[in-house]
Amino acid sequence: MTEGTPGGSAADRFALYDLFVAYGALIDAAEFDAWLALFAATCSYHILPRENYERGLPAGLVYCDSRAMLEDRICALREANKYNIHNDRHLIGLPRLIREENDAQLVEAPFAVYQTDQEGETRLFATGVYSDRIVVEASGLKFRDKLVLLDTFAVPSLLATPL
Amino acid sequence: MTEGTPGGSAADRFALYDLFVAYGALIDAAEFDAWLALFAATCSYHILPRENYERGLPAGLVYCDSRAMLEDRICALREANKYNIHNDRHLIGLPRLIREENDAQLVEAPFAVYQTDQEGETRLFATGVYSDRIVVEASGLKFRDKLVLLDTFAVPSLLATPL
Amino acid sequence: MTEGTPGGSAADRFALYDLFVAYGALIDAAEFDAWLALFAATCSYHILPRENYERGLPAGLVYCDSRAMLEDRICALREANKYNIHNDRHLIGLPRLIREENDAQLVEAPFAVYQTDQEGETRLFATGVYSDRIVVEASGLKFRDKLVLLDTFAVPSLLATPL
Image (cartoon, rainbow over all chains, first blue to last red):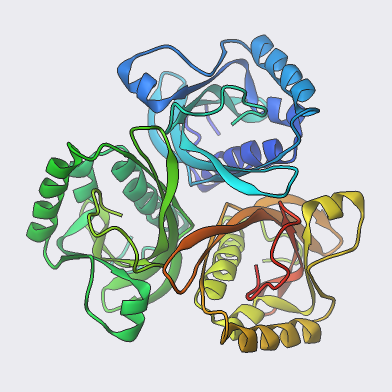
């Protein structure tokens, strides 16, 4: 696998699929250390409403511009989760190769997230699209820039887990 | 890639996956010219409740028997969309190769469509299954006959975007 | 394809994808004989809330420890379905290879199931994750142990179709 072409061979394509599959599965299993390992050494992670993104408004719900910020955020979420018990379930569509940008591949994938609360009620929590820059590191494909574009601006401001 | 066997090699299979991925993503991004380019020069596009289809009832919600009809329909939808602002989000399952029929491949894929309105509320809009005939043209795989089978007959009669 | 390595080559990987795709599609089409043929000669099929599974509680909603039990269960469901008319729609995420265990492959995949009732209303019915042991038999990949982990304990006790 050469840099910047995660969609080349069949093996590269499956590696890309596996990256997105692992992304959702590890959140749902609350395995956040393994989840963090899906990100590149230098990375960003943003959640913002699609509308803000399209209008060029910077206001996001989550804004982590470095790996340290992302790790801090995950620590905080773990603490918060003790008081907000719920299960997530991600359904992520097949990734779509958009284009190469310098040494990264721009890839998009639609998603729906369901949450189940302590009363056992399952609800649709959010839908949107991932718009990610993916790079090849020694240990495999990684998210360098993860942009979570939500279909709605009306998400509860307290996101208790990553999306 | 030879005619009628889009599921043969790994490259053919990924091309099939990419066709379905693009189908949903382009509706969600409101890129309807690019979406139209996913259809063959000679094509059809029908939306009808699964129940009608199984009983052989012809009544459909959308009935485009030619490319010209489909293009007209898209023009009309664009106009209507100015007054019905919403976002779609398609989640499409992996395509399933059913069989070859003459020079086309019959392929099915389940889907769920969510819509988000101007108040920011996201709702499940429809579920169903695509039952499509796919052909190989010079520029790649195309939908020749797209049949959108809805799980319910109770969809709002005004479909503001394709499904 | 050698035993226990359904995720090896591209062909093996697609065979795995196809197994999960067929699993959902055949339930949704009510083709239960073909659905049963996706299971190994020796097989099990369990449905239980994820919470019970994580706590080691055995109580499940469906407990079939042999192929004969599973076939009996399907017979009973067919009878029950005459009085509970609905359509299912499965959306299943990409399968995730977890590890090999003896001669089987442990594979997980997230799912959402929607049901449409006779009034035409479509609702989210359940979300969860399949945690399956998959083996290679002469006729292809089969489910040896299918474990349906539901995100909620609050599923109606009468499951009118498999999940």
